[in-house]
Length: 346
Ligand code: DGY
Image 1 (cartoon, rainbow, N blue to C red):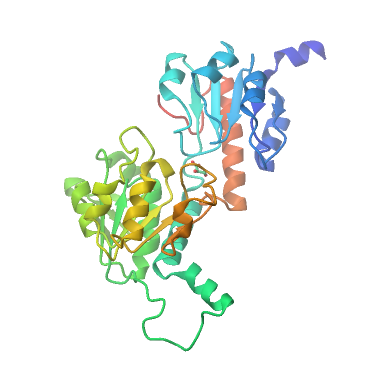
Image 2 (image 1 turned 120 degrees about the horizontal axis):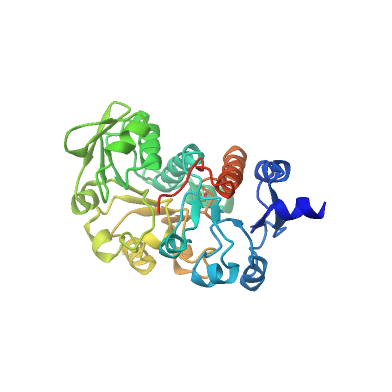
């Protein structure tokens, strides 16, 4: 038994992940793993730095910073990081690349859930649903009033998508039946290969064709000026950090709705507060903030026209289990030196 144990790869799992992933790890016969056995609090940094010592693989979630300090603490055995997330801004990619550590992540399996939630958040914000239920419950509901709780509708609107990747396209597909007039997007680079992956047509001048709509590529300037609804669907990178700032919001229409289900870091929150409180834009729906959790005393929570969710876009049972399973499989494949199902190209 001693010999058997030593041939197993040593793995640390930083969270009590959903059952499907744990089952895969347990039944693999390939790893010996230790787990931070809680889903309610993240593993304390100090504990994490100790637990990773000498491991071959690490399965983490987005609350763990995988940086130089952690990689140094882990030491030279570490060859695979598998994150149970599509986002990878918590990973120091440069450090990982330099050390030849491979990285697995979980795109695609969460696209439907995230797109669904984004539509829900958009409608909640534009039709003021949170304000409305609050009024109904707390006695604010007087007579039927002609302009009370009026919002903005999707019909005949222009929807702007910042970062037209898998999720952006999935959002467009879902919004198209709401009689949106125009879809526009901006992106850091043209991505014809993505169109192929998701069976969208890729037309002239980098336009995508989704659900019979041509999604036109515009500059960021034009996107902000023309969008009635603007959805952030990009990754957080040095290029997109706080790209939604004073300048960005100042170009948006006073009647426009801003939606962010990507990462809080793409927004300068002071500038967003300013834009919302001065009526520069009509409303914002955020699933992500900086920090997370956003302190309950944060000024954004005082605004009626700001809907804040606690980072739940991928939170469906099916999706979280699929993410867990994919993260487990990526890890096992990586440890066997095989191609992962979804591997980040560093
Ligand atoms: C991710 O996967 O990056 C999301 O933020 C959580 O699902």
